[in-house]
Length: 276
Ligand code: SF4
Image 1 (cartoon, rainbow, N blue to C red):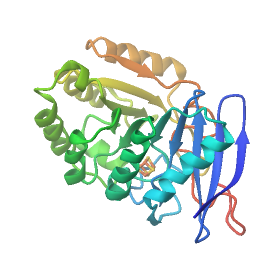
Image 2 (image 1 turned 30 degrees about the vertical axis):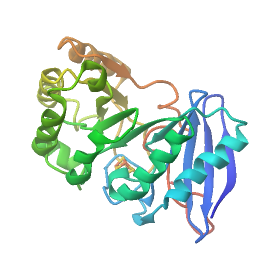
Image 3 (image 1 turned 180 degrees about the vertical axis):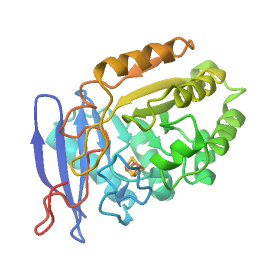
């Protein structure tokens, strides 16, 4: 039902190109020597402005077998190196919730650690994430102010509603449990790198003692958005740290041109379709 078409490698990452039975190509990426990032949908409807994955629209959900097969095919190719799965490739996992939950329990049964990245849309499924047996969830905030987030993630819940769910579900949990949830902030020059957004974001993150993943943008060809300078990136890192937050920076795998965050796409090398 899923075929491994190609693997492209550089010193850091391995980009896996899979073909579905009905002729779509999707992608996954192996990084850090142990983690496979897999796709949950063919395309994406959330339309985050910086991302290549949804730039051709949404085609269909992947079945749980197709989620599992991405791992099985890559694991065979890599001779057993995968110990972690990140459901963070093409698609919004919460919009393919049943298949993702089924695949999650199958991955766990194989002894794998599984993390999920989400925009928290739709909220009804976001609420259910707190009772699942995952190893971590990154919630894409990318802003401190409502209007900025709406600009970056056009199809989304309000920040206010997402915050409410986080407060309800995390206020009484142990610090160990709380560590499983982190907020993602992808910096886009001139869009969300202002201190009004960053201050509002930092205040909320510190009120719940949530870790922050501060991400550098991978420039996608044809999109008018740019990463912030290295200097600004470190300045913002220090600013967030001044709130007492634990902040992780984008590692070299995530900002790599091959398979870095937001760069996976559908039908990249299909005949008649141009590369993104
Ligand atoms: S970042 Fe994720 S949710 Fe947003 S468009 Fe890309 S794949 Fe979809």
